Length: 408
Image 1 (cartoon, rainbow, N blue to C red):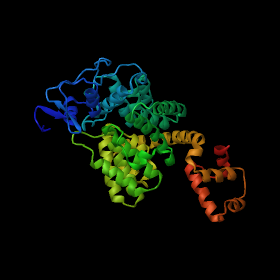
Image 2: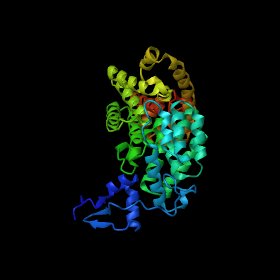
Image 3: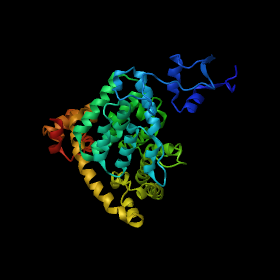
Image 4: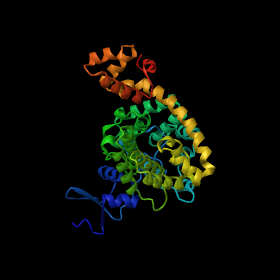
């Protein structure tokens, strides 16, 4: 039988026609809920006139999720619902009125995601956290909101909230509720790891760019986190390549994306680090022109120190009305970031440092002279000093006095 026969559709075509994920169509087929499906070689084909089956275990919302805790349900239900939530909430903001994206969804749990994103971009981190709280125990919506809420926790220095979400995400991962569920939970955790400059804690799949377990629309956020991982490791060529590739693959015809702004910012920062100031200016100007007309100051306040003064010049020249807002948010956010980073590092110092670095730090923190340490590790004093500088940089501290607090 010809798969192109107009009487039948492939799983991909059916998913597109129904507005669902291919995983959902597969679940319906294996569950015997689509009459007339046929096997052709190694693939299933679906009658062209087949209608999307309803799920009696789900309510009739846009994504069909009940308000019960999804971890108490079969894991395929959470897996599919998460795909649906991601698909419904990762879409372009209209250029002229980003807030109009709220009109594209009806379910409150989906609207809360957009409310949180818009609030974050405008620097209202408390509102982001309120949106997260309002989600309640809806795991699909909660997981979708976790990366953004972790970022808000970091921006407010709320380590307690971060620990709460960290525990939640780690429990989700341990529960093995589906590959895509695990990937989204780990992506949320990676938000903290790259923000705290702890690249060794980033998951291998993210380092390697294997996004196969993520819902398709979540890959842009993963690309941003991967670019930030390369920023952590000072590999600015790959940082730029990842961000540029993700931008090139983005469909921005109908608006702009939250993660798209951040990818433009990453391109600007990478170009500054590489000494390509004209390219940096172009990317940063594009990001400013997209974001600031709508009051989206956070991407620039978070990254102010990485442009060598370029951002301040562009603000003074083109957006003087936002200059003070960006600078003031940077001051507050940086202080809160330091508060968060200090607590995060103290808790995770053994993961941030390699075993050998931790051993060096442990000995140095006890006040052992550098010459004796060099003899103990069988290296030159110069090499040991270099190693200690790397340790200080990883922990964002200045010397042995501060080191003691992190080790003991």
